[in-house]
Image (tube, rainbow, N blue to C red; front, side, top):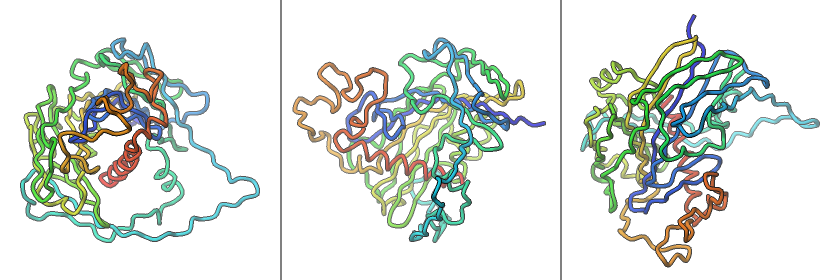
Length: 401
């Protein structure tokens, strides 16, 4: 009988980079999502427990964690239960009226190269970008939270909940973890030093200054200690088209690689086949001109650490270690940005927006609590990230399908 319960622990170092923009320390909350400050790396850990066994209102799941994680001695997992929806009394559900079907062209490119390799791009033409043809469950899944996987056939529990926040400085993952539940069993796993947080990716290029989309975009970074491989992706939208690129020799291998635990043998095989760049790599070029009809791509760089996988107590546990850097060229930054940024909001003393004279985040008066909605709207800039996050979610779905 195969394993029906999977416990996935993601150990991630991440940062968002807008070339030409100053660092924004501390991060903020936007639409219920915890967003790290631009250029300021953040460390996060997530736990996802999916099982073929059902959970109910009395179900509980918790995990003991090492003292070094600085959140302990244990964390409680939030359990999603299948929603029971009933139409309101006196009302009838009416189907949504079909709207205008927008046709899109998807162009995909792959591999590091100064010029477009022969046989590219792969083009998928006249794809409808709407929800037609989906059954109610598919529609609900598409519109619902990405963290909600509960169904009538199984269960999903996760940590942290919707109040997610960054881990404290100095937090470390090595040590023992023990999962205990009252509905799908329990297990334990030990993190070695190899499963600690990776260092942030230090991007060398693109930096400040103009990025010419007619030419190859050269990506350079400093070697990340303990990284065993890298993979890069980029995407942007133009007039009725979506353009994607990946450093992989196979354009469909991106998200499949970044989100699951890989053994040393799998990493070696993927590097040999060109799905991954080797751990010694420090540069890669996006072919010239593939994004020239757009305002610039969003580039996602991922360094892979030493993962861990085990099957014990009828539960498969996977530990995935990653460091990521998202370069926001798609927001127009790095496209002719000047060395000095104009002052805004009456800030004449050069102090960063949202920080008071004591160096505290004005949008976050409660220390490690999340920022307020007012903080999320500061300066008219941060709401733009909502569009970016929506694009990220949609593109991830494109890669998966």
